[in-house]
Image (cartoon, rainbow, N blue to C red; front, side):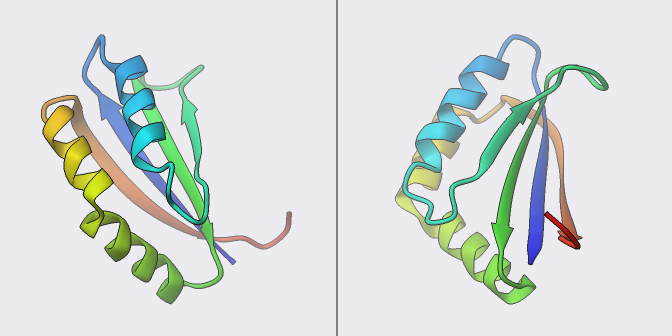
Length: 95
């Protein structure tokens, strides 16, 4: 099992809008992601976590997501809200 974490540094004042946009964008995603916001650490951080059976499944899911109309629409409505970001991959050892 693989956990993919996408970490976004969101422009000041746009975190709520970004969370709502991400909820709408991922509504049709088969593996429903968890969306988290910071309580500590760097301000204005949003994290999206998705579990997959393998790295290959994660790559397929990522490709399908980036090609979806929902993603394309979200890019048009959130063009300058993300200042920086990173994608992290983890092996789930125990749940």
